[in-house]
Image 1: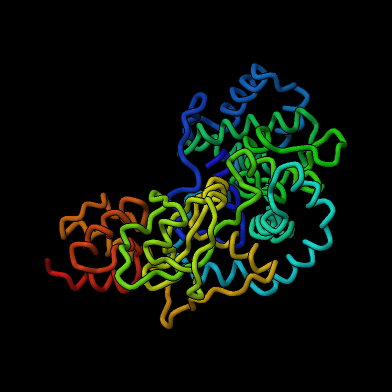
Image 2: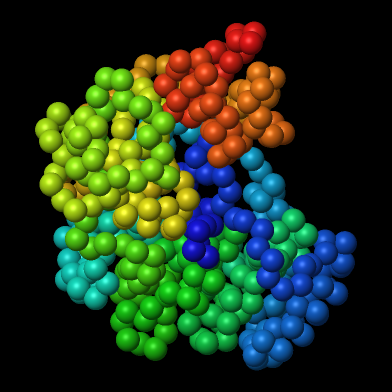
Length: 411
């Protein structure tokens, strides 16, 4: 995702590993660090390279004063959740009544500023407030880690050293340009910063001085927060004259192989295939392409999603997150609750459950790679193939039901 696929690493709502293949990819940027090298020795080399990149020695002296590796950062980096979240458990927490009501008040309170931002970038206010609400609960939780120390810890560690080394240089550039003081540069354990939870590379690429004071403060200035978020979204294809998507009703016998983001059809084509609004009414007559998705599988809600949903996925690659942003924005303007309801017995899968599912798919000849407890794209592809072979709806959705079915299947 943008340089922002780590947005919201510190957020209270953890994205399900079933729906997010990776928050941070390994990017080959600059020389790799080696964890075996003593931190102090490694830091001297990094400072020398920073000077070569144009960072002032004075900034480096201040930024690295008393910096030391943070054990908690490495603990979070290594931690894998034992249980995934289901679509419903995630959505119920992300789009709570409290968050909806507060968001409505903030939309009204900041209407003038949000209208100004919309006029410039074409991002509707309700969506900006929805991102704000999901990222940091409207600025309440911006992260308590010192960004330079957190990034230095991760850049020194060999696991994803190249990516975090590059982010560390970007963070130093932000300090060198005087946007924020080092002791005020706080963020998540992975370095996501401010009320937008921008990674430093996202800040240097898209953060904007919305209040005209010569600095960009995504920690404390709402003009800077909203202008920066809108600037980024506009840059990844956000459409100000479209919504994100809508809940839809699929006809009996619908081909579930069509329920993938890789398949895009005009609204009129989906209408011809029997797809309707959730209340049974015809789809809107609009010149828009979209994809049908089933974030909770064939037994959950179906959505017809458009370009703005895809833009949200650039911000955060989780289908759950993107669905929550759109749904929260709809609730701000009283577009109603979902027609689909949470089924009884809805429960998350443990890592052991997913490993069992993967192991049995491999056993039955549906190669999903080494079982690792994370249901990524390869697992979902294999599951679709298995479901198709057994006459089941090929939704590719890992569920407790599918775990049981695979365990009982003797081939």
